[in-house]
Length: 242
Image 1 (cartoon, rainbow, N blue to C red):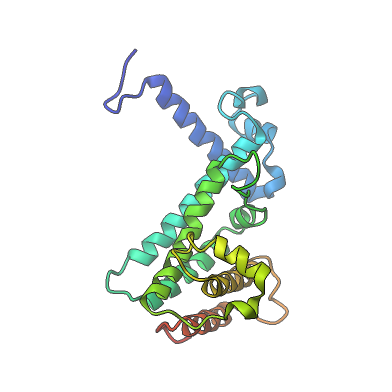
Image 2: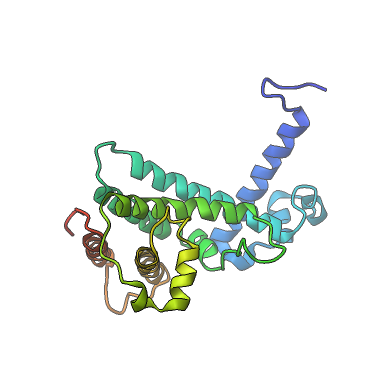
C-alpha cells in the first residue's frame, strides 16, 4: 500500500476527490434549480454515475445535503472572519459593520445557497437521540462570529438591557440557559443579542427573497442605516450611513 507524505493512500485521495466532485455537482444543481433539484439521481446524472454508486460516498440524501450545507456555512464563515480580522486596527463597531455587510453581500451573490442554509431549521443538539451533524457544527461556527462580537462588546462596555421582570420568568429561564454560550451575558443582554440578530437576518432575507422591492429600489442604504442603529444601541462607533 503506497502512502503519501500525509499518510493517506491513493484510494483515500481518490475517494476524497470524488466527494469534492459530488458536492460541487450538488451545488451546481442547487444554483440552477433550487433545493428541490438536489436529488441523488440528479447529482449522479450530472457526474455520469449511477445513483447506487453515490451511496459509496454518502449513506443517504440527507447526508449529502448535510455535507453541502456544512461546506457552505464554512465558506461563509471564512468570508466573514477574513473581513472581521482584515484590519487589526478596526474597533468593534467597524468589525460589526464589516461582518454584517459581508453577510448581506454573500447572500445577494449566492441566493440559492443562502436559501438552503437559512430556509430550513437548524437541528436542536439537545433533542433526544440527536447527534451533532456536520451541518449543525458548521452552523454553530457561523453563529459564533456574530455571538462572539456581541459578547466582546458586552464585556468591554455593557450596553443597556431590559430587566428580568420586563421579559417574564419563562423567557428569562430560557435565556439564562444560553448564558454560557453567550460568554456569561445576562438574560437581558442575550435577549437583545437575539433581537439584533433576527433583525439583521430578517432584513437580509426580505431583500434576497424579493420582499422589499415594493418599498425600496435598492435596500443598501436602508441596510446601512439599520446597522448604524444597532451599533448605536450597543454603544459602538459604527460608520455613518453613506
